Length: 373
Ligand code: NDP
Image 1 (cartoon, helix red, strand yellow):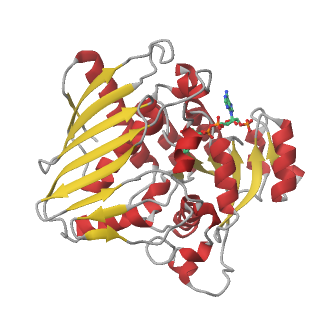
Image 2 (image 1 turned 45 degrees about the horizontal axis):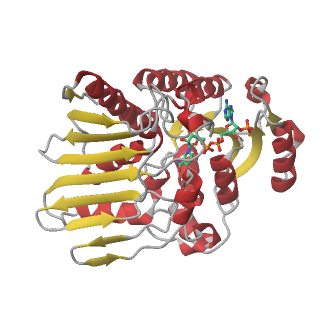
Protein backbone atom coordinates (compact mmCIF):
# COMPACT_ATOMS: atom_id res chain seq x y z
CA UNK A 1 0.00 0.00 0.00
CA UNK A 2 1.13 3.49 -0.71
CA UNK A 3 0.22 6.36 1.59
CA UNK A 4 -0.62 9.72 0.13
CA UNK A 5 2.56 11.08 1.64
CA UNK A 6 4.65 8.29 0.12
CA UNK A 7 3.07 9.01 -3.21
CA UNK A 8 3.76 12.72 -3.12
CA UNK A 9 7.18 12.17 -1.65
CA UNK A 10 8.21 9.76 -4.38
CA UNK A 11 7.46 12.52 -6.82
CA UNK A 12 9.68 14.81 -4.80
CA UNK A 13 13.40 14.55 -5.43
CA UNK A 14 13.85 16.68 -2.37
CA UNK A 15 12.79 19.99 -3.78
CA UNK A 16 13.04 21.22 -0.22
CA UNK A 17 16.77 20.78 -0.34
CA UNK A 18 17.05 23.24 -3.18
CA UNK A 19 17.83 26.74 -2.13
CA UNK A 20 15.42 29.60 -2.43
CA UNK A 21 17.66 31.24 -5.00
CA UNK A 22 17.27 28.27 -7.36
CA UNK A 23 13.94 29.62 -8.49
CA UNK A 24 13.95 32.82 -10.35
CA UNK A 25 12.08 34.47 -13.09
CA UNK A 26 8.65 32.95 -13.53
CA UNK A 27 6.91 33.03 -10.23
CA UNK A 28 8.82 35.19 -7.79
CA UNK A 29 7.58 38.61 -6.79
CA UNK A 30 9.92 41.04 -8.53
CA UNK A 31 11.35 42.20 -5.21
CA UNK A 32 12.53 38.65 -4.51
CA UNK A 33 14.45 38.32 -7.74
CA UNK A 34 16.89 40.93 -6.58
CA UNK A 35 20.01 39.52 -5.02
CA UNK A 36 20.19 41.93 -2.09
CA UNK A 37 18.49 40.99 1.19
CA UNK A 38 14.79 41.77 1.39
CA UNK A 39 13.77 44.26 4.05
CA UNK A 40 10.22 45.14 2.99
CA UNK A 41 6.96 44.17 4.70
CA UNK A 42 6.54 40.57 5.83
CA UNK A 43 3.29 38.63 6.25
CA UNK A 44 3.20 37.18 9.78
CA UNK A 45 1.42 33.84 9.60
CA UNK A 46 -0.07 31.43 12.15
CA UNK A 47 -0.63 27.86 11.00
CA UNK A 48 -3.78 26.09 12.18
CA UNK A 49 -3.46 22.27 12.19
CA UNK A 50 0.05 20.99 12.79
CA UNK A 51 -0.27 17.79 10.75
CA UNK A 52 1.54 16.40 7.73
CA UNK A 53 0.96 19.23 5.32
CA UNK A 54 1.12 21.97 7.96
CA UNK A 55 4.61 20.70 8.84
CA UNK A 56 5.67 20.85 5.20
CA UNK A 57 4.41 24.40 4.81
CA UNK A 58 6.15 25.49 8.03
CA UNK A 59 9.44 24.02 6.87
CA UNK A 60 9.16 25.62 3.42
CA UNK A 61 8.22 28.98 4.88
CA UNK A 62 11.61 29.15 6.59
CA UNK A 63 13.01 30.03 3.13
CA UNK A 64 10.29 32.54 2.27
CA UNK A 65 11.32 36.17 2.34
CA UNK A 66 7.93 37.86 2.52
CA UNK A 67 6.16 35.38 4.83
CA UNK A 68 7.15 34.29 8.32
CA UNK A 69 5.72 31.67 10.64
CA UNK A 70 4.98 33.43 13.94
CA UNK A 71 2.12 31.48 15.53
CA UNK A 72 0.30 28.16 15.86
CA UNK A 73 -3.24 26.92 16.51
CA UNK A 74 -3.45 23.29 17.49
CA UNK A 75 -5.43 20.77 19.51
CA UNK A 76 -2.26 18.95 20.56
CA UNK A 77 -0.24 20.66 23.34
CA UNK A 78 2.87 18.53 22.73
CA UNK A 79 3.03 19.66 19.09
CA UNK A 80 2.72 23.28 20.19
CA UNK A 81 5.75 22.82 22.46
CA UNK A 82 7.75 21.17 19.67
CA UNK A 83 6.91 23.88 17.17
CA UNK A 84 7.66 26.65 19.69
CA UNK A 85 11.13 25.22 20.16
CA UNK A 86 11.75 24.51 16.50
CA UNK A 87 10.45 27.81 15.10
CA UNK A 88 11.02 30.12 18.03
CA UNK A 89 7.31 30.86 18.51
CA UNK A 90 6.42 32.91 21.61
CA UNK A 91 3.82 31.58 24.06
CA UNK A 92 1.53 34.56 23.37
CA UNK A 93 1.16 33.42 19.72
CA UNK A 94 -0.04 29.89 20.60
CA UNK A 95 -3.73 29.00 20.55
CA UNK A 96 -6.06 26.00 20.60
CA UNK A 97 -9.36 25.45 18.79
CA UNK A 98 -11.36 26.81 21.74
CA UNK A 99 -9.54 30.07 22.29
CA UNK A 100 -8.22 31.11 18.87
CA UNK A 101 -10.89 33.82 18.46
CA UNK A 102 -8.65 35.76 20.87
CA UNK A 103 -6.21 36.15 18.02
CA UNK A 104 -8.16 39.32 17.28
CA UNK A 105 -6.26 40.95 20.14
CA UNK A 106 -2.89 39.88 18.80
CA UNK A 107 -1.31 42.59 16.69
CA UNK A 108 1.65 40.37 15.82
CA UNK A 109 -0.31 37.98 13.56
CA UNK A 110 -1.60 39.08 10.13
CA UNK A 111 -2.94 35.86 8.64
CA UNK A 112 -3.98 32.33 9.59
CA UNK A 113 -3.31 29.38 7.27
CA UNK A 114 -5.98 26.70 7.89
CA UNK A 115 -4.48 23.23 7.22
CA UNK A 116 -7.01 20.96 8.95
CA UNK A 117 -9.36 18.24 7.64
CA UNK A 118 -11.66 19.51 4.87
CA UNK A 119 -14.89 19.63 6.89
CA UNK A 120 -13.37 22.09 9.37
CA UNK A 121 -12.25 24.72 6.84
CA UNK A 122 -15.56 26.60 6.63
CA UNK A 123 -16.11 27.33 10.31
CA UNK A 124 -12.44 27.91 11.03
CA UNK A 125 -12.05 30.41 8.18
CA UNK A 126 -15.18 32.25 9.29
CA UNK A 127 -13.78 32.51 12.84
CA UNK A 128 -10.44 33.76 11.47
CA UNK A 129 -12.27 36.42 9.44
CA UNK A 130 -14.30 37.48 12.47
CA UNK A 131 -11.03 37.89 14.35
CA UNK A 132 -9.99 40.36 11.63
CA UNK A 133 -7.15 38.24 10.19
CA UNK A 134 -6.52 37.31 6.56
CA UNK A 135 -7.35 33.66 5.85
CA UNK A 136 -5.50 31.16 3.71
CA UNK A 137 -7.22 27.77 3.55
CA UNK A 138 -6.16 24.47 2.13
CA UNK A 139 -7.97 22.73 -0.71
CA UNK A 140 -10.75 21.77 -0.98
CA UNK A 141 -11.78 25.24 0.20
CA UNK A 142 -15.02 23.83 1.69
CA UNK A 143 -17.23 20.78 1.29
CA UNK A 144 -19.51 22.39 -1.31
CA UNK A 145 -20.19 25.67 -3.09
CA UNK A 146 -22.55 26.88 -0.35
CA UNK A 147 -19.81 26.56 2.29
CA UNK A 148 -17.41 28.45 0.01
CA UNK A 149 -19.94 31.25 -0.43
CA UNK A 150 -20.31 31.53 3.36
CA UNK A 151 -16.53 31.83 3.67
CA UNK A 152 -16.31 34.46 0.92
CA UNK A 153 -19.13 36.47 2.52
CA UNK A 154 -17.51 36.34 5.98
CA UNK A 155 -14.15 37.53 4.65
CA UNK A 156 -15.76 40.31 2.62
CA UNK A 157 -17.71 41.46 5.66
CA UNK A 158 -14.58 41.48 7.80
CA UNK A 159 -12.58 43.18 5.01
CA UNK A 160 -9.89 40.51 5.04
CA UNK A 161 -8.45 38.54 2.13
CA UNK A 162 -9.28 34.88 1.51
CA UNK A 163 -6.85 32.70 -0.45
CA UNK A 164 -6.82 28.97 -1.25
CA UNK A 165 -3.56 27.00 -1.01
CA UNK A 166 -3.27 26.21 -4.72
CA UNK A 167 0.54 25.91 -4.71
CA UNK A 168 0.69 24.90 -8.40
CA UNK A 169 -0.61 28.31 -9.46
CA UNK A 170 2.89 29.62 -8.72
CA UNK A 171 4.88 26.65 -10.02
CA UNK A 172 7.23 27.34 -12.97
CA UNK A 173 6.50 24.25 -15.16
CA UNK A 174 2.78 24.89 -14.75
CA UNK A 175 3.15 28.58 -15.54
CA UNK A 176 5.27 27.77 -18.61
CA UNK A 177 2.55 25.57 -20.13
CA UNK A 178 -0.02 28.27 -19.37
CA UNK A 179 2.25 30.80 -21.10
CA UNK A 180 2.61 28.55 -24.17
CA UNK A 181 -1.14 28.18 -24.46
CA UNK A 182 -1.68 31.93 -23.98
CA UNK A 183 0.99 32.80 -26.56
CA UNK A 184 -0.65 30.50 -29.11
CA UNK A 185 2.30 28.09 -29.30
CA UNK A 186 -0.08 25.11 -29.13
CA UNK A 187 -2.58 26.63 -31.56
CA UNK A 188 -6.23 26.31 -30.66
CA UNK A 189 -6.38 23.99 -27.66
CA UNK A 190 -9.29 21.61 -27.70
CA UNK A 191 -8.47 18.78 -25.29
CA UNK A 192 -7.22 18.34 -21.73
CA UNK A 193 -6.65 15.09 -19.92
CA UNK A 194 -6.16 15.10 -16.13
CA UNK A 195 -5.27 11.91 -14.27
CA UNK A 196 -5.07 12.26 -10.48
CA UNK A 197 -4.88 9.32 -8.12
CA UNK A 198 -3.02 6.97 -5.82
CA UNK A 199 -3.80 3.93 -3.68
CA UNK A 200 -4.66 5.24 -0.24
CA UNK A 201 -3.45 3.34 2.86
CA UNK A 202 -4.77 3.29 6.46
CA UNK A 203 -8.58 2.81 6.29
CA UNK A 204 -9.05 4.65 9.61
CA UNK A 205 -7.62 8.00 8.45
CA UNK A 206 -9.85 11.07 8.26
CA UNK A 207 -9.54 11.15 4.45
CA UNK A 208 -11.80 8.07 4.36
CA UNK A 209 -14.27 9.48 6.89
CA UNK A 210 -17.16 11.23 5.15
CA UNK A 211 -17.79 13.50 8.17
CA UNK A 212 -14.28 14.98 8.05
CA UNK A 213 -13.38 14.60 4.37
CA UNK A 214 -16.74 15.46 2.82
CA UNK A 215 -16.23 12.78 0.16
CA UNK A 216 -13.38 10.64 -1.08
CA UNK A 217 -10.73 10.90 -3.77
CA UNK A 218 -12.52 13.74 -5.58
CA UNK A 219 -12.22 16.13 -2.61
CA UNK A 220 -8.58 15.27 -2.06
CA UNK A 221 -6.91 14.50 -5.36
CA UNK A 222 -9.52 14.71 -8.15
CA UNK A 223 -9.76 18.43 -7.41
CA UNK A 224 -6.29 18.80 -8.97
CA UNK A 225 -7.60 17.56 -12.33
CA UNK A 226 -10.61 19.89 -12.09
CA UNK A 227 -8.48 22.88 -11.16
CA UNK A 228 -5.85 21.93 -13.77
CA UNK A 229 -8.41 21.67 -16.56
CA UNK A 230 -9.39 25.29 -15.92
CA UNK A 231 -5.91 26.80 -15.73
CA UNK A 232 -4.53 24.69 -18.55
CA UNK A 233 -7.40 25.44 -20.96
CA UNK A 234 -7.83 29.00 -19.68
CA UNK A 235 -11.62 28.84 -19.43
CA UNK A 236 -14.33 27.54 -17.13
CA UNK A 237 -16.49 24.53 -18.03
CA UNK A 238 -20.19 24.80 -18.92
CA UNK A 239 -21.18 21.16 -18.43
CA UNK A 240 -20.01 18.03 -16.69
CA UNK A 241 -20.81 14.31 -16.82
CA UNK A 242 -19.42 11.80 -14.29
CA UNK A 243 -19.39 8.10 -13.49
CA UNK A 244 -18.35 6.34 -10.27
CA UNK A 245 -16.75 2.91 -9.83
CA UNK A 246 -16.43 1.29 -6.41
CA UNK A 247 -14.57 -2.01 -6.04
CA UNK A 248 -14.04 -1.92 -2.25
CA UNK A 249 -17.16 -0.77 -0.39
CA UNK A 250 -15.66 -1.88 2.92
CA UNK A 251 -12.85 0.64 2.68
CA UNK A 252 -14.73 3.28 0.68
CA UNK A 253 -17.97 3.61 2.63
CA UNK A 254 -21.17 5.40 1.61
CA UNK A 255 -20.32 8.94 0.51
CA UNK A 256 -16.58 8.22 0.16
CA UNK A 257 -15.77 7.94 -3.54
CA UNK A 258 -13.09 5.53 -4.67
CA UNK A 259 -12.79 6.19 -8.42
CA UNK A 260 -14.62 8.73 -10.56
CA UNK A 261 -14.24 9.44 -14.26
CA UNK A 262 -15.60 12.75 -15.44
CA UNK A 263 -15.82 14.87 -18.55
CA UNK A 264 -16.05 18.64 -18.83
CA UNK A 265 -17.19 20.78 -21.76
CA UNK A 266 -15.90 24.33 -22.29
CA UNK A 267 -17.35 27.37 -24.13
CA UNK A 268 -14.69 27.18 -26.89
CA UNK A 269 -15.72 23.61 -27.68
CA UNK A 270 -12.72 22.14 -25.83
CA UNK A 271 -13.38 19.03 -23.75
CA UNK A 272 -11.61 17.51 -20.74
CA UNK A 273 -11.45 13.86 -19.78
CA UNK A 274 -10.41 13.23 -16.17
CA UNK A 275 -9.90 10.50 -13.61
CA UNK A 276 -9.85 10.75 -9.81
CA UNK A 277 -8.94 7.70 -7.75
CA UNK A 278 -7.96 6.47 -4.30
CA UNK A 279 -7.36 2.99 -5.67
CA UNK A 280 -5.11 3.35 -8.73
CA UNK A 281 -1.42 4.17 -8.44
CA UNK A 282 0.82 6.36 -10.60
CA UNK A 283 -1.87 8.76 -11.75
CA UNK A 284 -0.38 12.23 -11.96
CA UNK A 285 -0.52 13.47 -15.53
CA UNK A 286 -1.88 16.52 -17.35
CA UNK A 287 -2.01 16.55 -21.15
CA UNK A 288 -3.03 19.52 -23.25
CA UNK A 289 -3.59 19.20 -26.98
CA UNK A 290 -3.90 21.98 -29.54
CA UNK A 291 -3.99 22.03 -33.32
CA UNK A 292 -0.31 23.10 -33.48
CA UNK A 293 1.16 21.10 -30.61
CA UNK A 294 0.80 19.43 -27.23
CA UNK A 295 2.14 19.89 -23.71
CA UNK A 296 2.38 17.24 -21.06
CA UNK A 297 3.22 17.47 -17.35
CA UNK A 298 3.95 14.18 -15.60
CA UNK A 299 4.20 14.43 -12.68
CA UNK A 300 1.86 17.40 -12.82
CA UNK A 301 0.81 17.94 -9.20
CA UNK A 302 3.31 16.25 -6.84
CA UNK A 303 5.60 18.32 -4.65
CA UNK A 304 8.17 18.32 -7.41
CA UNK A 305 10.24 18.36 -9.40
CA UNK A 306 7.52 18.37 -12.03
CA UNK A 307 8.52 17.15 -15.47
CA UNK A 308 7.17 18.30 -18.79
CA UNK A 309 7.50 18.00 -22.54
CA UNK A 310 5.90 19.36 -25.66
CA UNK A 311 5.89 18.26 -29.29
CA UNK A 312 9.13 20.29 -29.55
CA UNK A 313 10.94 18.61 -26.65
CA UNK A 314 11.55 18.76 -22.92
CA UNK A 315 10.32 21.69 -20.84
CA UNK A 316 13.12 23.20 -18.77
CA UNK A 317 12.21 25.32 -15.78
CA UNK A 318 13.69 26.07 -12.38
CA UNK A 319 12.84 23.55 -9.69
CA UNK A 320 11.37 25.27 -6.66
CA UNK A 321 9.98 24.37 -3.28
CA UNK A 322 6.31 24.97 -4.07
CA UNK A 323 5.25 26.17 -0.65
CA UNK A 324 8.17 28.60 -0.31
CA UNK A 325 7.17 30.35 -3.53
CA UNK A 326 3.48 30.08 -2.70
CA UNK A 327 3.92 31.84 0.64
CA UNK A 328 6.01 34.62 -0.88
CA UNK A 329 3.45 35.11 -3.62
CA UNK A 330 0.53 35.01 -1.19
CA UNK A 331 2.28 37.59 0.98
CA UNK A 332 2.62 39.81 -2.10
CA UNK A 333 -1.09 39.31 -2.91
CA UNK A 334 -2.13 40.20 0.64
CA UNK A 335 0.35 42.97 1.39
CA UNK A 336 0.81 44.52 -2.07
CA UNK A 337 -2.39 43.57 -3.89
CA UNK A 338 -0.34 41.64 -6.43
CA UNK A 339 -2.43 39.94 -9.14
CA UNK A 340 -1.28 36.36 -9.67
CA UNK A 341 -1.17 34.84 -13.18
CA UNK A 342 -3.65 32.18 -12.04
CA UNK A 343 -5.98 33.42 -9.29
CA UNK A 344 -6.05 31.84 -5.81
CA UNK A 345 -8.93 33.78 -4.26
CA UNK A 346 -12.11 32.44 -2.70
CA UNK A 347 -14.09 32.70 -5.95
CA UNK A 348 -11.45 30.52 -7.62
CA UNK A 349 -11.76 27.93 -4.85
CA UNK A 350 -15.56 28.01 -5.05
CA UNK A 351 -15.51 27.25 -8.80
CA UNK A 352 -13.89 23.89 -8.11
CA UNK A 353 -16.51 23.07 -5.47
CA UNK A 354 -19.32 24.04 -7.86
CA UNK A 355 -17.87 21.51 -10.29
CA UNK A 356 -17.56 18.88 -7.55
CA UNK A 357 -21.20 19.49 -6.53
CA UNK A 358 -22.18 18.91 -10.17
CA UNK A 359 -19.99 15.79 -10.47
CA UNK A 360 -21.74 14.21 -7.48
CA UNK A 361 -25.11 15.25 -8.95
CA UNK A 362 -24.26 13.75 -12.32
CA UNK A 363 -23.28 10.46 -10.67
CA UNK A 364 -26.57 10.42 -8.76
CA UNK A 365 -28.81 11.31 -11.69
CA UNK A 366 -26.85 9.83 -14.58
CA UNK A 367 -27.35 13.14 -16.39
CA UNK A 368 -25.15 15.83 -17.89
CA UNK A 369 -25.18 18.82 -15.51
CA UNK A 370 -25.01 22.39 -16.79
CA UNK A 371 -22.51 24.61 -14.96
CA UNK A 372 -22.68 28.33 -14.28
CA UNK A 373 -19.39 29.40 -12.72
P1 NDP B 1 -3.13 15.55 8.63
O1 NDP B 1 -4.08 14.54 9.15
O2 NDP B 1 -1.72 15.19 8.46
O3 NDP B 1 -3.18 16.84 9.59
C1 NDP B 1 -4.37 17.48 9.91
C2 NDP B 1 -4.21 18.22 11.24
O4 NDP B 1 -5.42 18.90 11.50
C3 NDP B 1 -4.00 17.28 12.43
O5 NDP B 1 -2.67 16.92 12.64
C4 NDP B 1 -4.53 18.12 13.57
O6 NDP B 1 -3.51 19.03 13.98
C5 NDP B 1 -5.61 18.98 12.92
N1 NDP B 1 -6.98 18.51 13.26
C6 NDP B 1 -7.92 19.26 13.85
N2 NDP B 1 -9.04 18.56 14.04
C7 NDP B 1 -8.80 17.33 13.55
C8 NDP B 1 -9.59 16.14 13.47
N3 NDP B 1 -10.87 16.10 13.91
N4 NDP B 1 -9.05 15.05 12.91
C9 NDP B 1 -7.79 15.07 12.44
N5 NDP B 1 -6.99 16.17 12.49
C10 NDP B 1 -7.50 17.29 13.06
O7 NDP B 1 -3.75 16.07 7.26
P2 NDP B 1 -2.99 16.88 6.12
O8 NDP B 1 -2.07 17.84 6.73
O9 NDP B 1 -2.46 15.93 5.13
O10 NDP B 1 -4.22 17.66 5.40
C11 NDP B 1 -4.78 18.82 5.96
C12 NDP B 1 -5.41 19.67 4.84
O11 NDP B 1 -4.40 20.04 3.92
C13 NDP B 1 -6.48 18.95 4.03
O12 NDP B 1 -7.53 19.84 3.72
C14 NDP B 1 -5.77 18.52 2.76
O13 NDP B 1 -6.62 18.43 1.63
C15 NDP B 1 -4.76 19.64 2.60
N6 NDP B 1 -3.54 19.22 1.89
C16 NDP B 1 -3.10 19.96 0.84
C17 NDP B 1 -1.97 19.60 0.15
C18 NDP B 1 -1.46 20.44 -0.96
O14 NDP B 1 -0.54 20.03 -1.66
N7 NDP B 1 -2.02 21.62 -1.17
C19 NDP B 1 -1.23 18.39 0.49
C20 NDP B 1 -1.73 17.70 1.65
C21 NDP B 1 -2.86 18.10 2.30
P3 NDP B 1 -3.37 19.47 15.52
O15 NDP B 1 -2.99 18.22 16.25
O16 NDP B 1 -2.28 20.48 15.48
O17 NDP B 1 -4.67 20.03 15.95
